Amino acid sequence: MSVELQTARLLLRPLQLADAEQAQPLFAQWEIVKYLNAQVPWPYPPNRVFTYYRDKALPAIERGKEWHWTLRLKESPEILIGSIGLFQGLIDNRGYWLGLPWQGRGLMTEAVIAVNDYWFDVLGFKVLRAPKAQANIASRRISEKTGMRVIAAPVRDYVSGKLPAEIWEITADEWRAKRASLRIPS
Image (tube, rainbow, N blue to C red; front, top):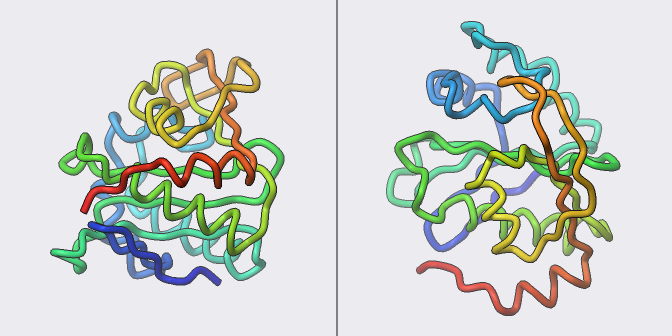
């Protein structure tokens, strides 16, 4: 089971079914989903966040295979602004999204630092991999800032179509070396 995490500006609260109501209108936007795996339906159906949480995410959390958090500003903890998750698997270990009004402030970088720490220091994994569309510049910048490197460049199916992708990776040792140099907003 996930535990609450904190950064300088964020609360990362373990995912709950009740979070679906706030997540649905934020997530169901083209700018949020266009670079996500093609398994995400588009147009995004009403109540789809609820069914995803109920049928996929929460059961995976219970099995100890996934860890999911909602993102909330400390100044307004009642408002969900995004989500981040960790996944056991060979290639796809981390995914996230942030509502449009909160993008471009470094908030997701803070969340990534917190969950990377959790992945390596609490869960004890030795490597973290995160695929992304090459066109997803904002996500690529987060990977660059946090010390990841590209290990493969396949073509993958996204909501917006078949696109060049990159598989980013960082090992536990690389993370610990990089972590010491990361500035975290206060």
